[in-house]
Length: 140
Image (spheres, one colour):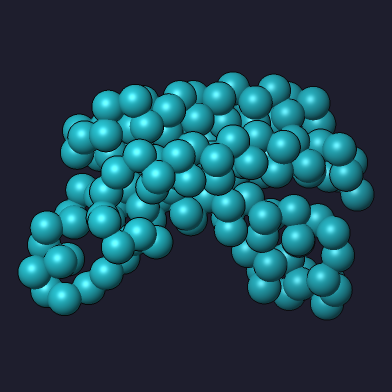
């Protein structure tokens, strides 16, 4: 996203970095949910995709929840920077809260179905937040 932003006006302004922050923070819970769902397959293939030697567990779920929590202020940042209107901020809070709830459920249950819900929730989150930012952008 940062490359696309810079291609538009040849600068790496704060707006591009705010979009980068959303994508950067989003990737951790997304990736760890995928790794949780397919942990056995990845382990058999010799790949270690989690930041813990023990594999799926409370610590991974807690980290996913923490990164997801950080997405809420990151999603509001474009509004605070004057790039989007207030509707995108409301959407960011709502979809961020929903995505955080999915991560909290993984923390509480520590099971593959919850990881799968977080994984699919990540796709929904990213699509909704980016569409909200697009359709609520301020004409500069």
